[in-house]
Length: 379
Image 1 (cartoon, rainbow, N blue to C red):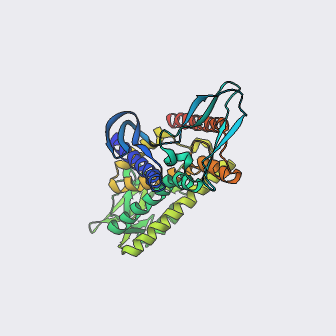
Image 2: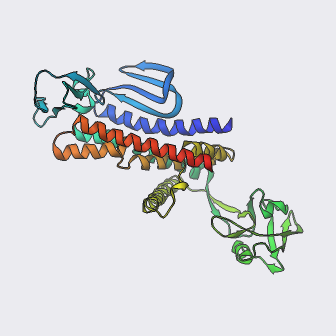
Image 3: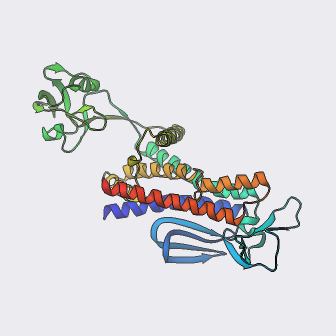
């Protein structure tokens, strides 16, 4: 139950913020938004304010803005017109409506104004449509700024303490099985004195599988335990399953804001680096996770508390914003590239070309989702 509630909260928050970005800029640039929806499928709740219907739908794994003029309609051609006609809107430097045919049959596809006139999406200037397309990812970058700021300002900034005091004990690891607990101070390892945290790592490296005696202090009482270090499969490091305690620094408003900005930049750079490694083949595709894996991770993080869950939501938001900017058809980045081409050509790509480009993008995304879901189920 915790996993379901946490997943709905996280996905709902990310989608709400993303679609809100598109919605606000669409309104500010004069587009008519007919529906603002969170989720897909049947409506659970809806209410109309002004010209826009606001709705919550049954499947909380996405959302959308229905903007007039983003869809196409099929109309019958009259006679043997040329393959492409243009209707000038009569305004100096205005938009020209191109009507390319989609086949040799007697039909064409044209942008559907839906009665919006100059407020239709395709009638707005290219720069306005660019801003609207990019606004979703922009909001996904802004949200983590607020989340990190709140965590830093209200909970403080934790930095690892150099003291040899245990901050956390990992379940089913040598330290946990030996009875060590949070707050214990390590005194010696096999008779060698431990004065700082790095002494622990230094003394157990290369000792996997070899038992050693450890003395520690708890509530003023000195105790001892025998542990057998183990090697971590991924990092190949020798561990006993403990992490250091932390010193908490309470930053002011400006410092918290600066730290939040630094963290957003750091995480984005790390994500860009990971994407580059993935494209170069340095990281295997099996490392990718899809919706199933993300829901599972969300549940695991939620069990640790609200702060770890908010932190995870911030990371997912940055990931969503970055992925959406990739120049892949059907993603915001793909739409942006199409608008750049329109600006350079002075006219949009024909609906037939747009149809095949979007179909290729959707096919790619669906294939990727199937692959990552299979990955998640195999883990």
